[in-house]
Image (cartoon, rainbow, N blue to C red; front, top):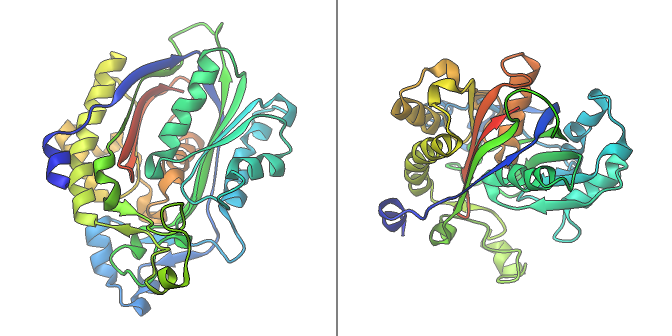
Length: 343
């Protein structure tokens, strides 16, 4: 399956969505830090984890903490932006680890925040935030939303098998969010997504999948005995696909946006693996200082990955209003999404 995906990749769909800006960001991770050394008791080699992924530590959610609980914390970015709950008119949550099949996690976040607004989940695995961002951007660009929250959150430790020592160390739990305001009359360069590219290739569906829990294979005692409630990932195949995909998609979306790679202030790629980020950086011929990297401290937080890194870059002054940022998410589906984004 993977050779077909590599030799004949399916194209992404290109678009733009202008007329909005970032006025607030937020992030949250569980307080419990789990280091590589802590995983040694499970039979994991701490040095192997670091050398193969670049990860030194990750956060694990405590019992009773769900995805909606994590997403609700950074989604309160409207408070620091000086807005009120009644001003928010759209909530989009990217996640593949919902609290329940029904209702949506977004509805639970909406209730925690006290919002009166449409709320929906977008599921695209590790590309979830990119897909959610582009979805919300359409509402803003069309004038159907004035103030939107876009969150990405995943509680990966609920779906990754702790007995799979090749996969368990790679993932952590976390969430991030942005508050977007429509700005059709703001002077200066266009704000919003100068270009975006979304793609999917179901030929790779089995490369990263939770077999049980959906309509195809409902939960059963036999399935639980086979541990089919947990995610299964063909790591080598996904790695090869991602290495090629990221470079091509980054070049594609930058060209569509009419922006040179040298003009971009910061690259925020999905924090899956340091070798993927380094491979893309090297292939693009860019300096390491152009890339925001925090996976060494948080691991792969899936939909939470990009907004978590963006919030850190925003809070530390690495990016700010008007900065040009390129984000790229990729993962199960297979699905991917990139955008050149003027904040």
